[in-house]
Image 1 (cartoon, rainbow, N blue to C red):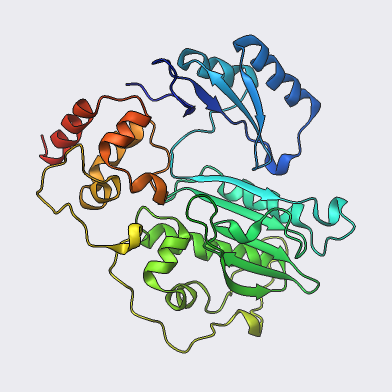
Image 2: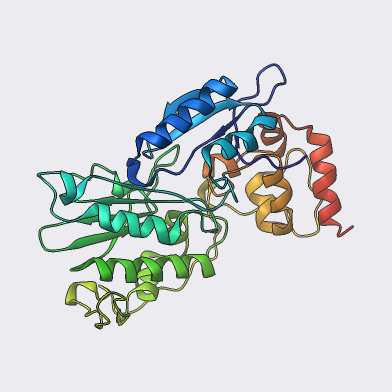
Amino acid sequence: MAQVAGNLQRIRNGERRYAITPRIPGGFVQPALLQKIADVAKTFKATLKITGAQRIMITNLKAEDVDKAWDMLGMTPAYTTSNRVRSVKFCPGTTFCKRAKQDSVSLGMKLDKLYVSQEMPSKMKMGVSGCPNSCSEAITKDIGVIGTATGWQVYAGGSAGAHPRFADLIAEVETEAQVLALVERMVTYYKENAHIERIGAFIDRIGLDTFKEAVLGELANTDATTAEPIATPASISTATATATEPKVALPGAGNQALGLSVGAPITADSIIREIIEVYPNTIPVLQSIGMGCLGCPSATQEPLWQAASIHGFDVDELVGRLETIRKGA
């Protein structure tokens, strides 16, 4: 099955429909793009949905119309790999809002340009709020930043959905440049060390102290605009003297022991989380049938037969493909 540059929606009467979500950084959109989106909807009889991530989703598209829709928009498809930086949500900040303490638009745009669509161990969402009102829900983002009267609070590990988690405060810094330096450290450490898990699950697995110890230290990066060293305020130092030893338990489902062991066959009842942990080379096959949330607990705790049913795929055929990979054939 050829991969479609869109997200598979609910299958009705055996018919597959897809959604695409054009990139609209921060929700700031020009009339010309709105007109293109409207033209796509009219041409393909699609439905438009305003999302919670400050974008406009175009849904109810047939598979054969997805590439044509992207062409009409004049955009490279946003759906490149399922586990990636999905969006950076930010409020109007000091650019427009009378209550804002910091320029969330400037910071949000820079984070969007740096990270959107970058491949990650799991999906990642970012949020930037210009004041503690946190209109962009930064506390429930994988990486969240909140402006204060004296600088920025930087958080990591938030998520909403079926298994909500408030983000942990990692540090308080004074400047935008320090935020960017710390975010880069967090993203790099996460990419190099995480399993297929969101940052919150990663932090829960290794311990918050270990995460802080790894990403803080002396932020002696250089501000590209001023070429001046970025000073490290006292508040950015770690709160603990020693790091804890990483835990070996795997994320999700209460970190119970795996029921699938190396060498054991994959069956229709095998749990998705266990398959990808024991046989990570099967991940591309699961992604090819439309499983775009392999890091989400609600998805990875499903048995294979349920995932196949949701995505309209024959479970016996899927088991056969996975088994071929497991056996190295």
